[in-house]
Length: 211
Image (cartoon, rainbow, N blue to C red; front, side, top):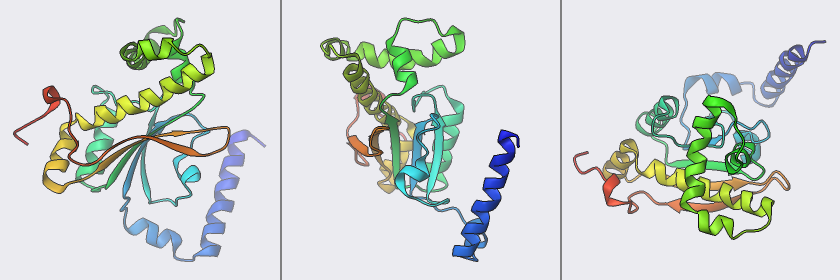
């Protein structure tokens, strides 16, 4: 059996299990999508949003990229954010990183990962540069990478707050709250590291008045 054939077989088994538990599962799922959460997570295959939060299909709107970045020029992420905030009316946006992130570790190194990855990892290098004194004071490589993971999540949450779509929703509807979490591969637990309530103060240069 080819590896992808196993995926198709597992899909059939999963669909049958869902229907056995709830005959109307897919009928109801097809009617409406009303998630309360937008999840911006890492593409790492070990960090699936639904499984680690115990949620069902339809409960979390998901965007994933390498090292869970909120980049101002990433049209894919911006389109997901716009749809989630303005059309799905999500109440919470979660940026979830994870310890042991290969993207974070790569950005902390001085290796050449060729043009495209170098450009993407530059966003994390900028986080390192911003917190360089704190990070360089940590002697243990693993502990330093873990702290960079946390700081990266915090900076991505701040990047969200600088977006016009978020500021407009804050002003007009007092939502969504923003959350920065880090998932541990060692024990499966999520650690909250940063929050910004709707309407939180941001740097004045990023504030937009005429929303």
